Length: 407
Image (cartoon, rainbow, N blue to C red; front, side):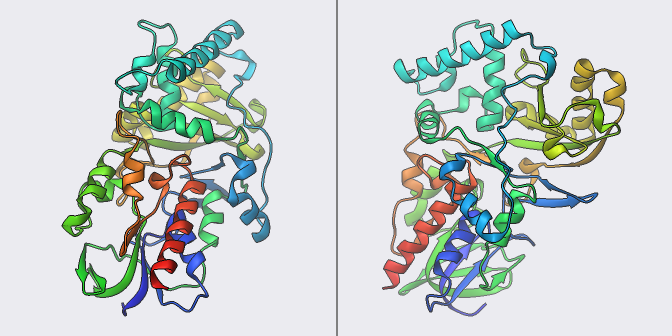
């Protein structure tokens, strides 16, 4: 806990990117991490010999995603197969005519957002009154944004859509494992949450349970929830950043992994949407990488409800939906392996950020330049928020700004 040139708060993708950019430049750098691991919302665990991503798992916008090159340079394989999200295995519970109508409703909603944006900036206000597929669109928002459409800024959402590519690739060894491996050899203080930051002469002081230290520049990469609730007390002049963070809450998306008794019961790399007419339903990826698993994905208000009920209840919900499509015998053979609960996770309280209606500009406020505290993380990205590559880019940018400040 010695004084340093740059203190980086948080060892997620943004903090790792910042540390990587600063490493080897003759500076004293220290990463302060509240948990006991590296990666933040990127987290690969090993269960029964399988690497499972409880956090981010897809290299979105893959053709321009820097993690692809990092993976290849680091010896990680990259799976470039197209995602199966847009297909419904054997059209079960979702006849082709209904699929076409639902996809058409999605495109029409998109067109209204772009061509006739609601004055409220609420994405829900672009839904047709009593629309047959409104619940389907709400379910998609849960997966994409982690939130209901009523809590989503239309302008913010379109900023992401306009910048995103169509390619979504994966890392068989785990996206979280890749991100954690990218941390350079810099000191990391684990289990060391920063409780307060004070102005201190030509630098700042940081208070932690392990004592205080001084830094010339601090890069703050914590989740918006941490800033919004005041878990780190900042000088009053940063109140606007905390207010901006409150307008960029973390939506919720959780995963559940179920093991198949009979892997041959379903084809590998296939997909099912649980109930296309329900806003609270699961998205089920069958046998990812050919493994004997079902990767269940829940988002938005449905994920909030299931998380509160616990993993066993979530597994029961998944079995019920899958049993309705594939039969009771199939559902009975599904065994709970692992699952996430990001809403209850210390230091997070959610999965990825979305702007509330009317507050798309909060991202620029949070990421505004400063001479002492620099903010980074996926929520600071104007277009690649909610992604690990967005977090990485903002961390690198903050590190470059720190270098400029330090001369």
